[in-house]
Amino acid sequence: MVLLGQDELREDDLQAVLERELPALVPEGTTTDSTTERAFVQMLRIGQSAFASQVLRNYGAACAFCGFTLDDGERPTLLRAGHIKPWRDSDDRERIDVANGIAACPTHDAAFDAGLMTLDPAGDHLTVSMSPRLRAAADHVPATARYFTGEGLRQKIVLTPPTVTPSTKYLRWHREHVYG
Image (cartoon, rainbow, N blue to C red; front, top):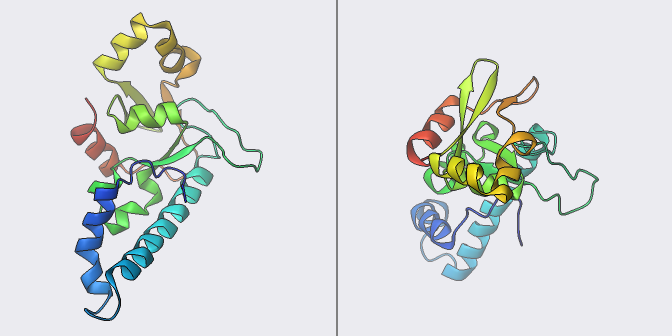
């Protein structure tokens, strides 16, 4: 099963959560490891699927960075519901917090996850910042410029109620630990 926005869920991330959380959920010796692991992974996926649906709905099924949408009721939508503070670094509550989510097309999702872009709170909107590396590429490579300048990338993102605005604590974490 492939879920929207779950490209960041690596096998070792799931294994670490399993090792940390499983003993508290299942008494020792009550079931086999493989059965328990499958059930636990399924629970994680259900939570992540709900997170993805809520984040995409929060952004009107459109990329926050460029406005791309394919919201015709069909799948795939070509959008990702990604975490601002990555899943592997978040606690259980942060993993499902809509204020830790951003809807993005695959290109902008990958750039954000790779730390090539970040978002900064600026009053009633968010400002998009590009890393020096991405800015240099956009200045010299026309194909990159198409996605990261002009109409290909909003310089500011205005979120109006009832949209849940990304939490400043997640944005700060992204800037300090991912961006650059």
